[in-house]
Length: 310
Image (cartoon, rainbow, N blue to C red; front, side, top):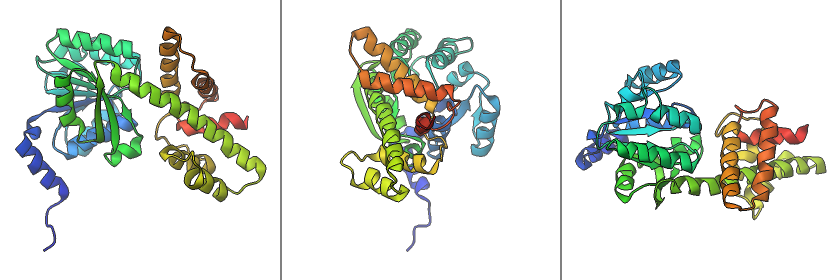
């Protein structure tokens, strides 16, 4: 007999047995990634409400998914057990957590903050200590994967924090991720993410270079695509995503170029502080900086190809 109930119903039943439906989650930050993460949590019955600095976006999410729109991070923090943040940079995370009407102002004792942003590890550790001083706990939980991975619930999440906080965070993160790894204390999730993005940023610049080289040689787009995404020993999930974008000129955002430039800036600072040479990542950073000067900040980071066209 055909199944008469959607999978989401069975998932809600399972979660109810596990006690997860009783966990109230609020999401702060409804960008490309945050919107999708919040939607996954809403679909599984965990999301109570959202906050976004651009109010119209939060109102649109609230209407579409039937959740509360909070007027400040403090009000959201006072109404939930777990605060999930997905924001752009150090300043945004610091403001939302420690600024006026920030999370710390409303944080309830025993609450957990899961920051999924990619920011400076030193800033994250500082904020985690502030959260701990208010009776809460915090993990850094940056992700590997684009908006496509969020929609498929295939994110990889790299978590830094205590074992107890990790175990609590995992029960929320499993609703939007495939792989959740505890890599060490606070800050270490971000260190793990930074080595990933140092490689990723450099790799996509290299992809852009060889796509242009292939065109200069007179190879067809179909040959370039097949070699780089199917036949090459250097093929990867990234080449499968980015080479088609480069060949078609479709730079709709999976991961914004401004965010890759920001991440490589952090890598550069952290490496410099330790005296570690990173010539490839440093060179890649210059390409993304040039791309931003060309006005490409809001495009997918595959648009770094356009630097080579000038």
